[in-house]
Image 1 (tube, rainbow, N blue to C red):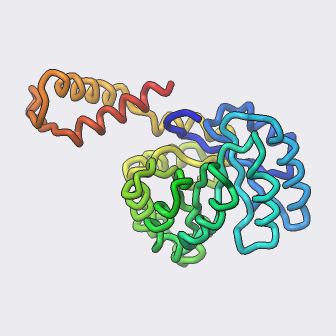
Image 2 (tube, rainbow, N blue to C red):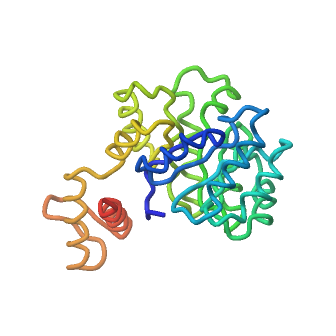
Length: 270
């Protein structure tokens, strides 16, 4: 997997031709979805098709299994977790640390990513993020969360967004990616939303169509000005240790230097 995935492309598990196209679309991670994107009467077919697809090693393919309280979850985990083509499991509707631990005990060392889609999940975000060494990330599922909270305006989710970002960082995890933007044609609004998400502290975003990928990547990659500033900070830190002021009067310390190093690392991913 790339050091800093920025694009997470979801694709329905019961549509093998679409999955094949998604694998060639250039996303950092392809997420084969067995949950929301698959009707109940096609769950078994989706699982079998996904198992066939991932029977051989493939880079950066995750599976979103069905929620743990559904009748399909146990079969999803038993069938898919051992496969060499699965590089991560995304767990929907997680509401407790115990949910994650239960999966980790069955999935071995496979990376787990918890999706928080209810008020209870958000309230327990830090406990979930730190529940087990196999947890590599947490993220919001905003459509379900919006319904659970009765939120109508987008800004009504900002507290939940910030809480999950802080919980991830407090648990030593990477900043979470933003939830999906449902309108695949409105790329201008997507770009504006990504810019706002980046300002909040998100890193990357889930997508539901390949045309969204370049917009997301462009929004989260450092700008030339940000790269120049980061290079200046790192150069100054190499010349003199400890807190100091740059020629333009800006004060820098270890935390500022670490942030600059992260910016340069992100820029080098291209």
